[in-house]
Length: 326
Ligand code: UT7
Image (cartoon, rainbow, N blue to C red; front, side):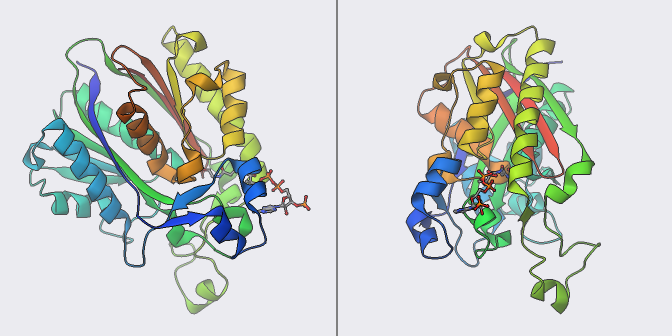
């Protein structure tokens, strides 16, 4: 058994920017409030007709090119998303065809914002068991498509992007050391999209009642989220015989700067060792950790041998962490 290693990364965000000043003209809010309460200044929003797979394909192409890997070499594609192109087929299936990955199986992982850690974990297991040698793990969202732009509690947060990682077997002891996945469905009513599934199939009524938008009790999500970040980060560090001091860079799901700061403080990580890009991206769900990881890697914030901690939480609730020796 060999560990899975991230050999390269790619990221893509739609061209269109939505600033806090733009939002001031849409709902009763202010740039000052949004920056103070969330840390967000601007976010990328997909065009009409621009779907999740369009972003995923761009990110994956970049990751493959950087790795020097041909599409035919990819054996499995896993996409973490909550905003797939269609109810079915899966977004991974669309990506497989558009990339020309003719030898690849494909599946979506549906774990809200923790889709980042879930998809990375699923991809890593296939490498670790020896089943596959080349896996594409992707996180991609167009959360703007399920955002109610009259609801100031959600429209200031949610945004669109995609990130991708090429996974291959590691030669030595460096790679994805461990991943942890958790869930607790009792929290489902804190963050969910009521319409469009088998519980409330799409009707004129579900549309009229705005049931196809994300609903969130932000304040309650906030409190549980901090606990989950801390819990998953501490557990994965302890199980691998590591302490917070050993972590060179913590890359959390970019949900809210205050959540990130509170969690980092409790885990014992100074903000100099925490990667934050929420100011320019907002909350991009399952894409957020991939996009942050790609940026940190491109900027040279990650060096060979570094210990990298990833942690995320999302609707459901789901939460989890990953520990990587780069
Ligand atoms: O990936 C997981 C996704 N979700 C999250 O991570 C969300 C976690 N939660 C949050 O990020 C925060 O709870 C929010 C940013 C959503 C809200 O921040 P908060 O500090 O928890 O504010 P609050 O809901 O306690 O509201 C405080 C006040 C309220 O006014 P009153 O009742 O004190 O007069 C709200 O009505 O702020 C008001 N408010 C706003 N004011 C200006 C709520 N949203 C806004 C807004 N602009 N956009």
